Each structure stands twice: as structure tokens, then as C-alpha cells.
Image 1 (cartoon, rainbow, N blue to C red):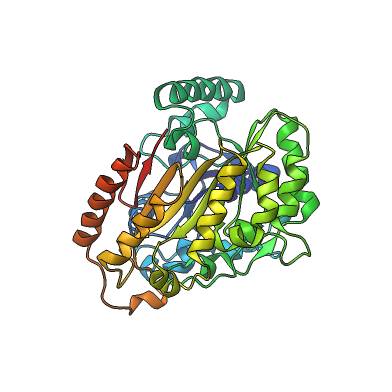
Image 2: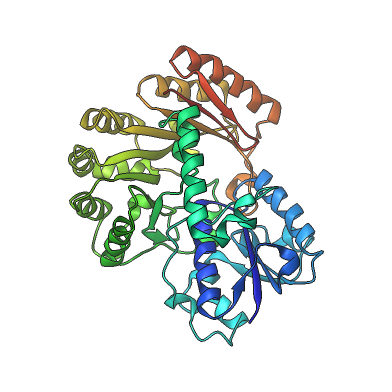
Length: 415
């Protein structure tokens, strides 16, 4: 029996991988420990979608190598930052697409394990994110009842202090919702993104399996669900189905629940708006996160994202009319190479024409291997901060008084 310590600093999809990895080791008779000091194996799941995230993970990997345990670095970082990672770590790695393929690399590293990775059910609750002082990891996960009581108390105070519809409570809830990951991989070729390189080609989870996981969450008493994938709206295109067909089947299932939709490309919103409009009238959809990225047609074209912004605007307005209580979150990017002040103003003007609740501006970070490495001129960090301040002033006048600022993004929201 090996003692395994698992830690992650990544997106929710990789956090779900972490939970599945935990189940994999438990089912094969190994013990999960709450400290790297106690471990024979340290499993670290790392992201590299943004330069700041990659830097954090390089530092963490350096620290974890000080322990006696065998370190395995998994996630997207080993593929997307292969060259840079080699400066810090030359040990065993498992990239995202290597983990999730039918013949998973993890089974080759641990050939003694009788239960294979593809025989382990998918994770539905996000694994705890790496933090400096992770009380959850150290104590709570030893006692399921204590965990439930503690998280329920924290969830109550988060809603009380921040509000049930606050940015933090919806996107970073204390009490984790039940996730149904409906697909993996990505077929898009956005010029700024490296996810497709690490995640591999798009493939949908079987329809009945998605419905089965959703019903499982309901049977366990969950009321908040998250439907997620790298490209959620693409679901079913490879298995003679569609995202509206799946979502429509879910909302017809009786129960007291709400569904959140994550990572929805605006392209699919336009394609499926007629069907989505009817589904959203059910009142079962709590919020939807739509990646728009820019209000400038020129920048959208450079991003290699093929959609008409006027049609996007119209579709969002139709969703709002279908359910006035719907929480709409839109993602944009600031500082895309060659972006002018006029291009950024076009984004602000676009926002002025739609009624969203959350606006998330990601600070552009050039990633290795993308076409944008050579695109000039680059936008300086000073210019990016100037535009964010401009957005803050502009959006405050539009009724977005609240702000959350991190190194990677700044979010504006109204209650």
C-alpha cells in the first residue's frame, strides 16, 4: 500500500481529474494522506493557461521536490510548458490528454493497480484547490460528517456577507456544487489558446452517462449543478446529439435544483438560441458563462473566433427575456496583441448594449506555441492597467459598482 498526497492548482476540469485520481488510488488499495511529508507519492496537478498561473506552479513544483516522495506532475502544464517545466523538473509527468485517453498513462506508471483509470467513474465534486493554509485538506476530509457541517456553516456566512448572487458565491462557492463534465478536449483553433494542445481532440461523454451522473447528484441531495467542458456547447456533435438535447433532457427531470453552464462559446449561443430560449423559460438555469472575448470585429477575427457580434448581442437579450432571473456572465480579454484604444472601447460599447450580471476581463498573457507569439505590436502591462481603470470608471456608471481584482483577471459585477 502506497501513501499518496494529491494537490492541485488548476481549472475546475482538472480539479475533477484530481478527484478521479484520488478514487483511482483508493480503489486500488492505497491510502490518501493530508501532508506531503507522509507521502510515498506526491501527485501535483498543474495548469498553465496563463503566465502567472504557470509561474505559481513552477514555484510549487520546486518546493514539492524537497520531500522524499516520488513527485508526479500532471495536468496541462507538462504539455503546454514542456520546455520551461524542464528547467524546474525532469521527473515523471502525465499530460491531460495522456491521463484521459483510453490507455491512460497513469496505468503504465502503476502497472500493479488492477483497477484501471478508465474504469473509475468521473469526478463530480471539485478537489480542494491548493492554498497556503488548507484546513480542508489537513482535517476535514478525515471526517465526512464534520466536512458537511463545516462547509454548510461557511456557505451560510458567505451568502450572508457577500450575497447569494455575488461573484464569489456563484463562481467560488464554499459548498461545492455537483459537476457533470459532459466532454473533454477541444477542436477550436483560437489563436490565443493552448488548451487544445493539452486537452486533445473533442469527445463527448455518452448521453446516458451524463444523465446518469445528473440523477446521481439529485439522489445525493444536491440542488446546485454545474455542466462543464472545455467547449460545452460542442457537446454531441461527435455522437449524433447536441447540447440543447442534453440540457433539455436534464431540465425535464423532476426536482428542486438549478443548473449553471460553464465555458459556453458565443458561436454555440447563436447556433442554438431558438432551442435554448425555450429551455431557459423553465427557470431551471441559474447562470451561464459566455466567452465573448471582445466587442471589436477586427479582434474577434484575429482571435480566430467565428461569430457575428450583433447576433451574439441579440441572443443574450433573448435569454434575458426568457428568464429575467437568469445570471449572465460574460468573459472578455484586455490587451490582445494589436488591440487599440478604439478596439477596447468597442468592447465597452458592446457591454453597454446587453444586460449582464458579471463581466470578467482576463489580462492577456502570451502562451508558448500560439500564433500570437509573433504578432506585433504587443500591448504593455501599463497599457492593460490603463484600460482596466478606464473600464472600471465606465462600468461603474453602467451599474457595476463591485470589483474583484487578481493578477489574472478583474471582474465587475452588480447584485
